Image (tube, rainbow, N blue to C red):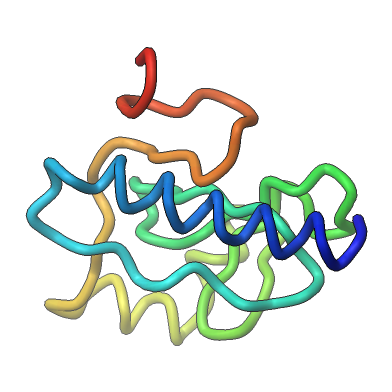
Length: 111
């Protein structure tokens, strides 16, 4: 993916999150700025971002605290994630919001 496409994807992603989050009282954590993934989807149940860039080696991986987790069980076994999940800053438990044009966004345009 070219730098221009990544930049445009980031801008579109931020716009989609803003639009999708209009009815949500809790704001989502900022989209990761990791250059290994150019498209992110909010994984609401777990309260973390998931790489939705099918050109990335991290496609489908969960991202929390600067690290990628290839499985949900790997994420859940992380001591940093366990601490986050039990804290008042945990943003999980809601419906999934896609930051890209890929799989299953809920709400937003035409949804």
